[in-house]
Image (tube, rainbow, N blue to C red; front, side, top):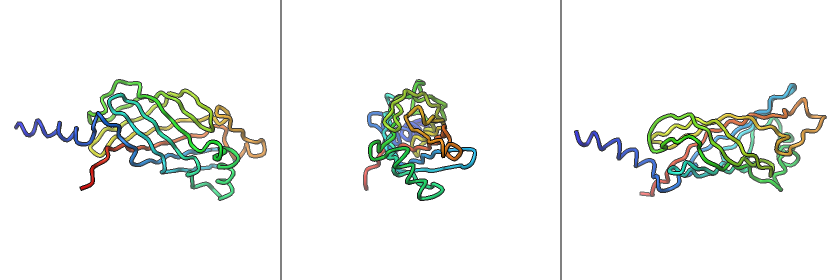
Length: 184
């Protein structure tokens, strides 16, 4: 009986070490531009980040140049060089804190809001983004869906392509944070 009481506690502490930040182990970040004449979808699995479980703080970095899946190579080139200006602004970042006082060491599903500094194209905006957090033995999974207004970040869409590139894009994220496991 005593073993049955201790087992859940041991299992929970085995996959989340509150004193250490957990690293982003897997990511899928995509954006969707749904304009009248064209739908553009691109994604990257190259994000990196940390989640401080005790403090509910986080930092995520996305190398913009790693987005792929555009409708054509020329479209990707325009995204990297003309719109995102990756040579000058290579990363998009989001750094902040989970507002709700949830215990990220307790398994479960939580609807929370992440508040922080969202930086795209070198322009910082304070954002509150709704997220779903699932704490499980496999790690802490964070998913979200939110809109980004391009002009809010100094990204200008020329009149000639306004029917092909939406002024507001939807961003969808799926991030899995895990503690690093020691090598055997």
